[in-house]
Image (cartoon, rainbow, N blue to C red):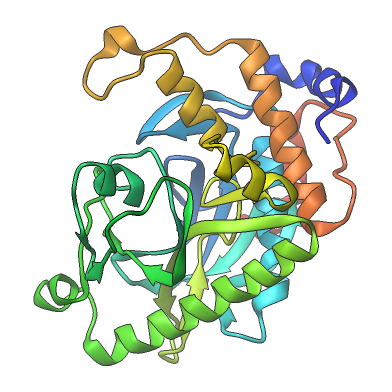
Length: 327
């Protein structure tokens, strides 16, 4: 449960959030939407550094206190839970914000799995359904569905990877040589299995895993390996299970524990793609609320307490913890 005490404990980190990193000697650096990645080619490994950057609608908006630690540690927990289903990228976890991973030959497709008709981004299934789309990423969607309704079974709705993600179906994947049919069969099979494990474990904690995206690649031995992050509040949507049905029947939005809260808040404030005059100012109150939501999800999913650092100087701590990895 989000408490005033949690938000208050995050206040000292408002001014010291980790917007970017500069870890000298750790290899070639490039920045993603949320993570800074350092690559050591000879060692065949990468360092995924989870920053506190907050993105939505493919825009970096602000920073959220301790979000990076939450993302990294919740991914660590999920990788441990799915290791019996497929190989994972993880080599070491030397810091609360850092994961050392294998260098993989990445599949240039985001594997998106959905269990409910929802979402607010331009590629979301509800956005498209509401505009009349019924053939969606190779899936025929039935008439008469309403927002936040559960599908009969989970579906795969892949997108391309780039500055702007684009919807694609299996034929498009094969035509663009992004994957072979044989590879895609295994990719989809593993993604479905990981998602069902996620649904099962989430429900044990009173949560519904609504949808997610996975990234996968192949290691040196050609083994399909899951990468990036798993079932974090940035890559996945979670709803509270005990209130879902009642709220659905009343036409209310489900109670969520993910960044959909932020997307909906932006929409309520008038945000529209392409019109910067509609982009609202992000208040500290919203930043603290999001930070508390991330921590609540971590604790709900893992069943463990989130440890708030005593020291706000996260960059110095990372330098110390990563000293042995410098080249």
